[in-house]
Image (tube, rainbow over all chains, first blue to last red; front, top):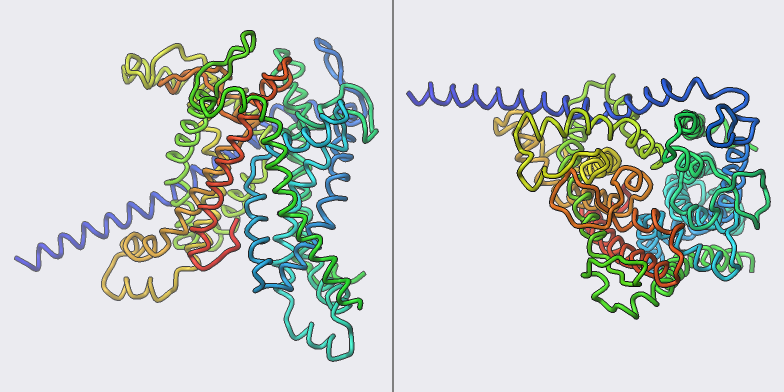
Length: 288
Length: 302
């Protein structure tokens, strides 16, 4: 009697276990479905408009088919350059500090604040740059946009730099010190250099993330229908252009938006893949 | 000599982070100050939004922010935990890598691309299939939750797109936390005769609970501040409605949507005051999340 009822519960428990485990498989399937759908729609709707003109021509006026996003592609490049010029040195410097002062109270506090900074919505970064860099000068500029994006890069680069430097074996640091290197030369030419491939990966991931940001640019770079590479003027950007085109009621513009999104995703994907490659061939690229 | 200079320089770079946070706080609050000063704390409870008569209140945007984030978490949390459990416990090795890569990739897609897909694919899909299903097939059209005309851009659309966007964050943190659960915990459960699911449910998940909650709250932080995708699919209307099919606003989408049209100083300042509110909320949410994840014994996730 007891035996049969335990056997029955055991069977029931096994069935339940089987069903629940199957459900986790279903969850994985559902979670990857949107990504596949998005990629498929991008390819299906965007591929036909991605051609030579898209990269070399200026945007066509409303109602006119064709045209390209040459100015927006160059603009995004400019913004990424400005952002990297700010975000990379500060992020790497701060990461070095955090890794080398591990236990210090100041380091713990800064690590925490860096996480908080990383969690701030990008639109708040836009308001910050607008209030400090657009409002006082009374006009929008590429520089303000680049600084907003650069501020977003700082916590990302700081964290990966710290993690990568922590992975460098202490014995390497000790060996350099034993050979008579000063502390700062040890840090820069032995530790930082060993950690470089990992830091490059982190930097690329950060670039991939900010290159697609739109919200901060509404307040800063503004977008531009014309050709401009001046840091003090409003500048076009790929994500801004996609936003404008997606909300317009014209089919031609929707096609351009899909094409722009496909190019943007392609850019992000290529950067991510390079990042993976760099990590894998750690010591191959660690040289000069 | 060189050592001291080196130390000063790296300390200087590190100090940029607190200074930057301080500057952000100051600039957001000073931009919103005229509105906060004029309307006081009532700004956050009033539903007015009348640029002509210069009366502003953020209640509908706050309401929309909470509702859309709640929808997102309700959809994404079970899925994300399911994915994390699948990847860390059950997945055969040959699918683990590709699935983990695809889920990570979800986090890399720019917000504006989600918005584009949302407005041109997801919204029409909701309008044609999902909304009629609730209204006609299930006859729920008269209940407040599903009432009103179903145009497409809606709270439901915003919540759905947010769910897709926060899922990778929650599942990444959950995976990390599950990896931190000691093997002995699993072996002990199996030794006591637990099935594989009972091992997860009774031994692994409770052990990881605070870390998982931290991950969910981290996802909440993302959802609260997400701007472009939401702006493009939520319909942008300053109104509190119980219906999931009604258009609405979130704090971030109201700022993004109205910034370029705001002409008076007070209107602009009111948008910035909404931004100040968003700043405070996301800082609080992030601090709680970090604390919970940190308590799990690891401080470097997601």
